Length: 127
Image (cartoon, rainbow, N blue to C red):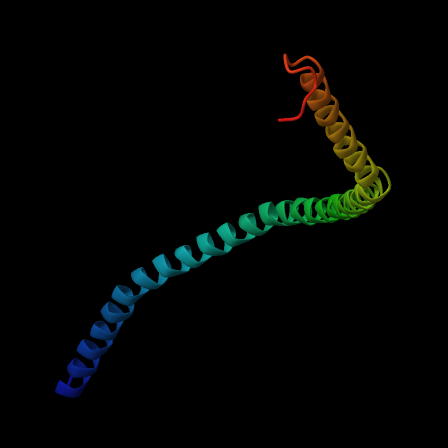
C-alpha cells in the first residue's frame, strides 16, 4: 500500500464520518418536517369545518341585519307619522285650545273683579 492509497483511505473514512455526522441532523430535520406536515394536515382538517360554520354564521347574520334594517325603516316611518300627527294636532287643536284657555282665564279674572266689587263695603263704587 502506498502513501497515496493510505491518504485516499483516510479521506474516504473521513468522508464517511462526515456523512454520518450530517445524516443525524438531516434525519431529525426530516422527522420535524414530517411532523410539521402532519400538524398542518390536522389543522386544515379542523379548520375547514370551522370556516364552513363561520360562513353559515355570517350568512345568517346578514339575513338578520336585513330584518333589522326593515324594522329600523318601519320605526323611522312610524316616527315620521307621529311627528306629522303631533304637528297636525298642534295646528288644528292646540291653537284653539290655547285661545279657549286664554278666553276662560280672562272671563274668570273679569268675573272675579266684578264679584269683588259687588261684595265690597263701598257697594260697587269704583276705586
